[in-house]
Length: 285
Image 1 (cartoon, rainbow, N blue to C red):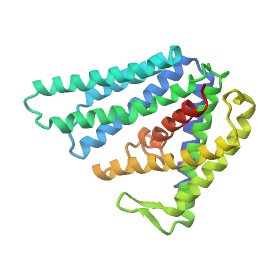
Image 2: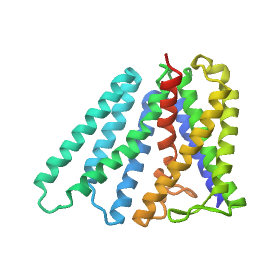
Image 3: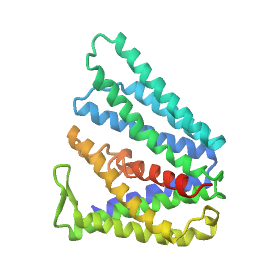
Image 4: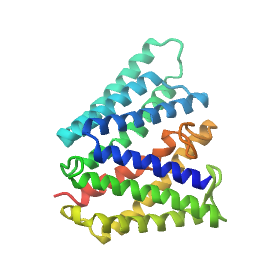
């Protein structure tokens, strides 16, 4: 199981990074928007299988617009991207209230609106921090530090996931949160954090000559290794919480050994915003 999961993860993230580094910007945007949309669809499908109300069509439409707009404005003017997202979320909330006013059959107004907006915020909005990192330093495909920082983000996050899984399987004895995820252990958490810090320092050493303009150092690599490792585990646990609530084992079945698109990116949804915030607070003038 571990070998199958690890192989699937390596292949899929190799494909994603290849798309980001070697294909035109439009292809990168389309690929990421498609991945985000599939994950959002899986989120709403989980809710429906759990008997919870949501406006799936509205959420999917809003998610696509949010993803496409974030890429469009991140490439051209990063500051506008944040404003665009806020305005779109406001429009989505107002639109959902108008929808409920005319829908006499759906009386679960609070649940429908809350679940729909949660999906858009949880999946595409958080995933949109990837293009923001890419274009934070005005880098373009293959020649800017932003793209290398995305590589760094994926490497640390996924090594933490694999390290936590392997350590937990080999040495796990003490359950961390059995009411949410019975297989997660404190030993796995510790192993994941150690692997994340090693991956962070190793990736920094490899990328150092090309990201020197960012002002990144070993202290940053150690701090981010720990911070991203913690957020990676939290992201994984958060999706487990959703799956437990809806009585779903995996978000989908399209990825052997992993599950669905949401299972693939769940930890990145938490680590990408944290890396972006760290760069904004400490590595921009």
